Length: 147
Image (tube, rainbow, N blue to C red):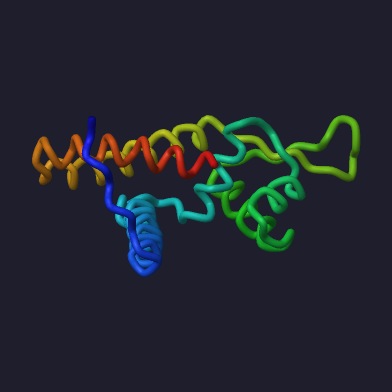
């Protein structure tokens, strides 16, 4: 029978909540900004949203929870760079459909590769026991995120 786990106090729970949130935010930020990519994080987010299939600018604005003008600026940049293609909606001539180009798909692949490499390099500095602990922690974080 496993030993009982001590109950955390409210203060300890609050501290864990704050520390965990901050650690997750720092890792996320560092992976995004230090993986040295030519695509800004907000641009990459739009590319990934288009990876699931073509969308309208309005749909992107809703998904990203930003204003239509903000999405328009981001999309214009991505179109100029050849990462996103614009086409007329065949059923509604007033609507524009956005989709990834081959270069856009390659940019997603390369950005993910660089981000994974950045994190993998940091994980190499850990012991086998620390990496095993992260395997367990990852499963827990996935469970928390799914709730």
